Image 1: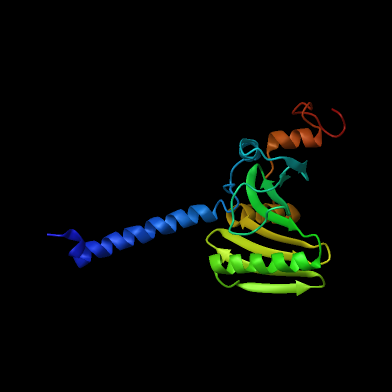
Image 2: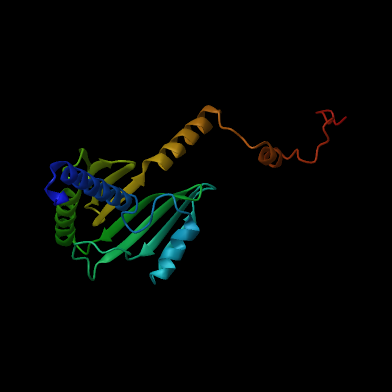
Length: 212
């Protein structure tokens, strides 16, 4: 008996194939520009060095935010970006990759318009129609939502820049909640760390404000 002629067996095989494809697609969505969300900045730099790419900028905006800008990109997209000014931006929160961005700077308005059309077609073909869009002055944005990932396509006509930014929502949500806790004064503070901040780490337990 040919098992493939059994409709139940065929249905199971098709279901398993679909689940396997969905799992592979989800993994690809979590590493859209070749960097898996949640990896450390050291792991990201290892990937950059392994692919022979050059860092353009590396800075720490605060104790929790670090940004890296890399020349070029490490993935291949079905787009003609040869000879264009392309860079990849990475943002880390508490040493976890929060967002990754593809940034292309055009030479003039004509090239910027061409890039915008090409990238929009690519994104619609891959992810469908955007969930929302907005515009203000020289800026336009289109937003897509995927499981755990928000993607925003930006265009800046004044500076001739187009940008695709992917944000990992679980890490972003943790960042937002901690920022809100800090504003509300409800942030959980490490007692040992607080002693150094307050400068009272050398005070004996019986010390009071009078010095006794």
